[in-house]
Structure formats: C-alpha cells, structure tokens
Image (cartoon, rainbow, N blue to C red; front, side, top):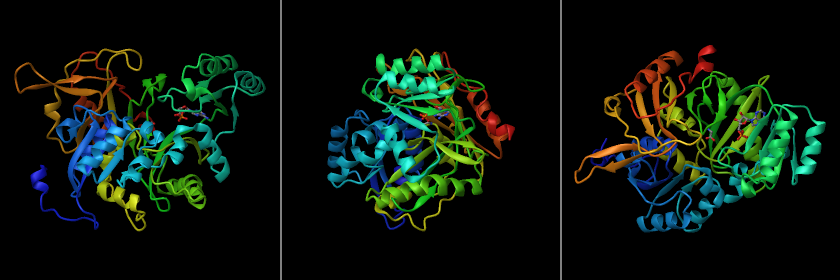
Length: 446
Ligand code: AMP
Ligand code: GLY
C-alpha cells in the first residue's frame, strides 16, 4: 500500500491520523515500521536511526536512539503524533518523561518505572513486594561478601550486574570458581562499569524459558501471544549468548489456560501494585519467564518489545497496532480485543560470521527480491544499510552489524513454518552468513 492509496481511509477508533517516529535500528524496529505502515491511522513514518529495511518504508533520520534532545527537537518541529521506542536505553534515560513534558505522545514507561529493566535489583524488589514468583536472591555491594555468600550456596548459581549491560550482565555459573570469576569480572575488573556497582546473586532455576509480553495502560492488561527466543549462538542452545538468533510464536508451553495463570501470578500483581502506589505503568511489559512445575518464575522484566520476539509476534497480529498503542497511552484499553492470525510464526536471524565476537561489515546482500512478493514470508532488516553506487541511482544493500536480518515465515504448524523459512533463506546470500539451523526445535518436540 502506498501513502497515496491510504488517503481517504479516514478515522479509526476515534483517532486522527498521525506522523509516527520509531526510535531504534534493529529487526524489532523494522518489524514495527512494517506493521504500522498497514495502519490507516498513520500519515508518515520516521525511523531514528533506522536501517536499510526501514529506509524503504520510512524516512530514516541521522539521530541516534539515545540522543533524546535531538529526537525531541525533531518531534516538536515535525509535530510527531506518536513516538514508539524500541530499545531500553532511551527509556531508562527518561525519553518518555521528556516527551510528555513537551506535550508529545510517546509509548513506554517513565524513567522511574523503566528501572524494572534498568535495575535488576529494583525489579527483584518489586517482585518480592508484590509476591511474584522469582528465584531467591541476595544483593551485594562488594566482592568479599558476595564470595562469602557463594561459599555457603550450592552451584549452579547466577551472578547478575544490576544495571544495563547490553544483555551480557548475566552469568550462569556451573560451579563456585566460575561464580568467583563472575564476581571479579563485574566488581573488580568493572567490565560493565557503573552497571556492576551492585550485583545480585541468585538461585539457578531449571525449566523452560518463554517470553510473555503485555500491553498495558496502567490498569487494563492485554497479553500478546507467547513466544520463545533462542539466545545462544549455536544449535542445541550451545555457545555464548547473542542478542537472539531466532524466535517463534506461540510457545506451545503457554496455551490459553497458562496465559491466564501467568497474567494472574505475574502481571496483575505488578501492574495493580504499581497503580496502587500512584505509579501506573504504561507501555509494553515483557516478562522473561522460566516455567517450572507450571509456575512462571520471572527471570527478568523488560520495558519494551523483545527482539527477535517481536518479529515472530507482530506478523500474527491482525489488529491495528497504532490504535492499540494510542489507546494504551490514553488509558482506554478496557474492552479492546486483539485479533490474531492462527498460523505459527517463526523468525530465523541471519548473522555476520564471527558474531557475537568480532565480524566484518560491508558485505553485499543479494537475493532478497525473490522473497518480496510472498504473503507468508517477511524479511526484517537489522544490521543493513543502503549505499548508493558511484554516480548512479542504483543502490546496494550492505551488512552493517552482527545480526543482519530476520527471515520470518507463517506456516500451518511449526514444521511448515520451518520449511518455508529455511527454504527462503537459501535464496539470500552474503559473505560469511551464519544462522542456526534448528530454530523452533523445542516447539517441534512438543
Ligand atoms: P536475564 O537477562 O535476566 O533474562 O538473563 C539472561 C539469561 O540468563 C536468561 O534468558 C536465562 O537463560 C539465564 N538466567 C537468568 N536468570 C536465571 C536463573 N535464575 N536461573 C537460570 N537461568 C537464568
Ligand atoms: N529477546 C530478548 C530481549 O529482547 O531482551
């Protein structure tokens, strides 16, 4: 659909059409851009800074996701009617407070509540206060006391830096010497800087992980379909953690019954508790859960859409995302129903060889044209950029990051989705391309 085709589609849900600003540059942000492009409530989309995929549908801005002052200046000048923030850093830095003070609509929690992701200690304290299932833990401000505690506890044990550490601040330690080394890394070597001034040491839970995200306006809770991420770089969930190598939705572990139970045990206590304290939480609340004996233990809260979970969830969402978000901001979610495509959705991430270690950039990406006309296959770019060829209008698409893109497919069941996605990937080429061949394997075992 072009902008011109959307003229005259009129109002939706009582809202006027708006210009939308998406903050971020990953696969999640391209997927959000793709989804809201279908909304009859959208006039124009900007993405800051965006990537080679968002450039095709939105106008990319040369503003970093963390440059809040420049984002605000732009939003004021262009009269942006809605800003959606992808990554956690600007939320934790207080982008929502600043936009709201300027009278601009923005989706996400204020700084004080973004601490649910920005401080693992704050999140744990909230969970403890509101009776949410989570691993037993202790907080430490120095390495000596932390090590004394480790000596008294059984391994495996988990050591976590309190603050944001680009997904690397959690170390699952198989024995006590690994745990000592983790404490030293965070508190003595200061690997994560200030984020490691305080740490959590917690019980290691065994079970199966699942991601449950909800929209909330501070009161009403609207769950999205469940999903499962694949964080490790190698097949069979081996090797170091990455930003996420693939995802699928729904997670067979979480059916309707389970979801109701998870809302009751995890999300209601937190959202109602915060509201009682006069701090209504608005935005997406993402629970990274470990299911153990049907009990949803919270490993972490995130205050934003997941990546790559979003790429496996939004293609299933039939409802208008912009309408839902505007309702959440205005406190009007009550009575809203989400419509879902019943098909299974699978996302496989294509990465640069060497990622999550060092890798090369600037490799030409080929073969995407053959996937463009498919109704059931989508490509969401992450580390890509469009580069003009010398003195001609033609452009090349080059790799510019570790996770390059996600290839996403809708299928009648897990096997069908896997077949479609892996067949589609065969058409895509860039030097050094790496991807996991087993995304969805746990769902296929069910
Ligand atoms: P987090 O950023 O807190 O979600 O942690 C990253 C990953 O570490 C999770 O996805 C889990 O795989 C693992 N993890 C975190 N906390 C625990 C825990 N208490 N027990 C077992 N694994 C954990
Ligand atoms: N998929 C994990 C995250 O978004 O943090």
